[in-house]
Amino acid sequence: RLTKSWNRDPQFEQRYLELLKLRFSEGELQQCEVMLKDMRDSEHIDCLVDNLLPFPINARIISSFFWPKIENEEFTMPQALMIGLDEYARGFEAHKGSRKLEWMSAVGSIELEVELDDVKAVVAVSPAHAAVLSLFTKKETWTVDEMAAELKMDKRNVKKRLEWWQNSGVVYASA
Image 1: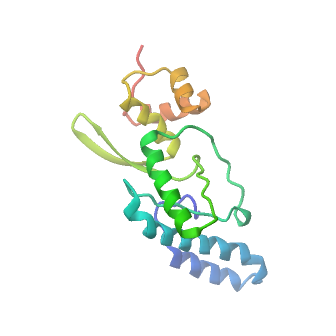
Image 2: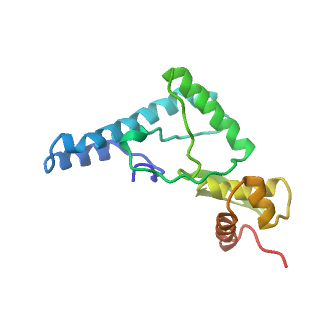
């Protein structure tokens, strides 16, 4: 819930944790405390690095030892996005010293403004969905094989993301 939500409400989560403490021991909820601290720290870092970034980034910086294992899908992020992520990482490392960020491309969401026939829509999608759509800024027509090679993404995953964009009416398959 903490990593998937676009909107953060740390006060709600803290109240929820306090209610859980009534039923469980303090030690049993130590991981939850660390997770909530990670959320607060993430907001703080977001504010510190915001002026360095070419576009807004709201990261969830987690202490991986205390969080459930998150499956990551490796693929090549679009260059335009990597510029912002690299700037964020530099700002983070300047404030945290020896700590390094490892971006997990399979989680999170990206808010895109999509324009088709003079109609604009803002959509929040996964980084993988954004990566697939971003290829169409390079050229108009792609095969699944070309997209998979360009993004270094599994073909099944490319197809899945393309189908989502097709169902949304943003791209279409040619004969």
